[in-house]
Amino acid sequence: MATLDSKIPSGPLEKKWEKHQFESKLINPANRRKYTILIVGSGLAGASAAASLGELGYNVKCFCYQDSPRRAHSIAAQGGINAAKNYQNDGDSVYRLFYDTIKGGDFRAREANVYRLAEVSNAIIDQCVAQGVPFAREYGGLLANRSFGGAQVSRTFYARGQTGQQLLLGAYSALCRQIAQGTVEMFPRTEMLELVVVDGHAKGIVVRDMVTGGISAHAGDTVVLATGGYGNVFYLSTNAKGCNATAVYRAYKKGAFFANPCYTQIHPTCIPVHGDYQSKLTLMSESLRNDGRVWVPKRKEDCDKPPGQIPEDARDYYLERKYPSFGNLAPRDISSRAAKQVCDEGRGVGPGKLGVYLDFAAAIARLGKNVISERYGNLFDMYHKITAEDAYQQPMRIFPAVHYTMGGLWVDYNLMSNLPGLHVLGEANFSDHGANRLGASALMQGLADGYFVLPYTIGNYLAPHGAKKVTTDHPEFKKAVEEVRARTDKFLAIKGKRSVDSFHRELGLLLWEKCGMGRNEAGLKDALAKIPKIREEFWQNVNVPGEGEGINQSLEMAGRVADFLEFGELMCLDALERRESCGGHFREEYQMEDGEAKRDDEHFAHVAAWECTGVDSKPVRHVEELNYENIKLAVRSYK
Picture 1 (cartoon, helix red, strand yellow):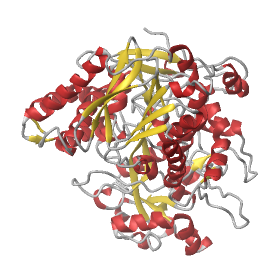
Picture 2 (cartoon, helix red, strand yellow):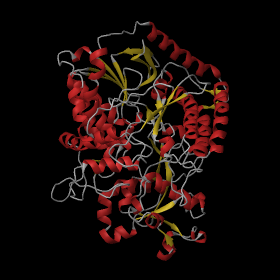
Picture 3 (cartoon, rainbow, N blue to C red):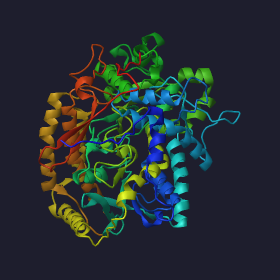
Picture 4 (cartoon, rainbow, N blue to C red):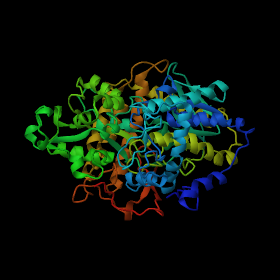
């Protein structure tokens, strides 16, 4: 078993990051242009990192599969971004944000990384305001805040229901400035298909031009992956259809450890599934739970009645009943399981009885329709376009859906993988959220990693190793290019009878049933037995039409689904081995008498980091112990 060195600095918690910044190695400004950094992904983490490193003078190449960095999936984030500014004077602080995040993650995250995240959160807001991000403001001009799940203070900054879009435009403007100055070269419509490792170090990538079909290699002094999460392994999720796990999974197969893949987040506030024809789901921001009240009928007999005909005393506001201290702003994992429970009891609403109500009647009566429209108008419009229902007149119907993944490639305090030279940012790494992410913390982590962490820590790798230059003439690059070409040719040559989408849907349904909101040993073993059979049929019977040259979306999806068919097995294996319930990982065998998650701190207060040993052989499970020096492990309660 390998020893995982997290490189957490010594000293008091509140001084660790400052100490680490001072002790980190520096690159002379005149020498930075000699280093080439390859950044894959141009969402908040990737764009902010590319802009910041370009500003410092490094030679940066940034790759994205979208036609513009503006279209990265960060644009879909709605509700807000957390920071410990305490503008509301309601008791917030860096330490409280740190504690809320650790507790929200069910005590399964590193103290030092989470404290650093809370510490730099305030600088993120200052940075974005300076860029012109149009955060909501109060009448007097001060920045406004609202609350999100798992917190009893108002610390979330927002731009109506478009916060991710506005933050991404800020990062994009900074990126464009560096592109114009020549420090960043942008490669849109380009998908990474392989990581190149030379003498044990990540030194390049192989990509496919999604317009021409051309396959090429790029060499650099270090590789940065900022490619998001793997939620689309479930087929139906709130992620954009293009979101995939190929970049991180290619890195895993080349030696990077994958940490906690079973930690997946189910968001409680999504538009319910409408039918078998759907290809994705739509998020309704958690911010809606500031003013919306979640309820279902108390009696099964009332579930088919219009909500307006169900009197107040016949309604079960179950989150307010079960979690009075937090009410409708209980954390996502808890709120999602509570919704599943009432639906399992037969009290769900809408088609298929897989839905609960999110009701704004009381807020509209108290504040007026105009105020609610100012806060959430674009979300209400989106809901109306999808459902043809007016949420100003009747409650929204919502149900949990896959939204985010807390697992990711293992990284140390410098955000570098166990594979030297490979840095991983944002949702693509595992570092900050434990077993459950609190709302409005994803944007915070992505921008923290890109603007304020990696620019300081990347020198710790480049200073001692950057002088070892590698070009694409190296045999490892030629080997990687040939492997990608062979894989492409293999997809096109199968000429089977089933579409790529049919395999993806089959895998996703299996994972949702066996490794979704509720998991148990029998179900996980069943999934582990079925996934290899689905994968085997895929490689024998998939039909990928078209050619390798030019635009071929079926070919793109085939590569992504092929990786999902391997990764899904790793996810179920991790869920099976973690014999406890914590955060978004809910093993039905391990729960309290009241149905809450039951952790096993004695045996599982650690990070599980998996090492690939081949497709058909069991990966090796490594462990990084989580040591809590500043907080006390406790039963997570929001009651």
